[in-house]
Structures are given as C-alpha cells and as structure tokens.
Image 1 (cartoon, one colour):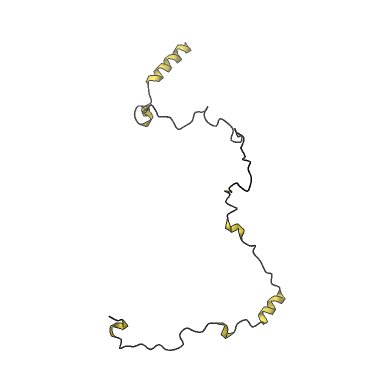
Image 2 (cartoon, rainbow, N blue to C red):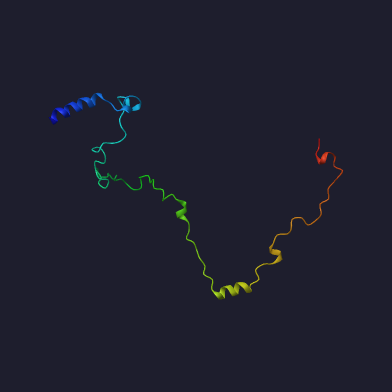
Length: 126
C-alpha cells in the first residue's frame, strides 16, 4: 500500500507547483536556488586542505617581493631616544642663562609708515 501511495504522491508533486514557482524568477527553467543542499554544503572540513601547496623554487634574488611590510616606511624609523633627567641635570639647566634679548628676531615695523594722500586713483597708473 505504501509503494503505490508514494508513486502517486511523486506524480502529483511533478504537476502541482508551489505558488511562488508559477510566476516570478523561480518559474524560469534556468533558475537555481542559491541555498545549497545538505549534500552540497561543506563537503570537506575547513581545516583540511584538499591540495598540497606548491612552493616555487627559484633564485631568491630574481623573485619579485610583493610583501607590504618590506616597503613600509613606518617600520624604517630610527629608534626613539629617551633621555632620563636626574636632579643634578635639572639644577644645572636652571642655573644656565638660556635666552638673550638678541637671540630673538627684531620687530618688523620699527618706524611709522607715511602714506601719500595725493596719489591719483589710489596710487594705480591708468
């Protein structure tokens, strides 16, 4: 009894469609569902690699280096130098006269600027 019922059910399943399969993108004969089947999903464990890596063997001087860190200029900086000041060093610095008035540049305007109020046209030539 189960065998004829299953056969009838499979025949009806072929002709009766779900409402979203009648029209729309699912009705196209070339449509393929984006969801993989249980037998298609993750055939191998992610930790296992199916192929062995092929490492090219060549002369190291002739191989172009595409690594970023060798060209990164931030890694080529000289090391930061830190100075530890002791109390004697600070006292010595405080006793030294560090600035003189002549060390600073002179003030730009030292004389009064006199304007010519008789300039015709604001001083521009025509």
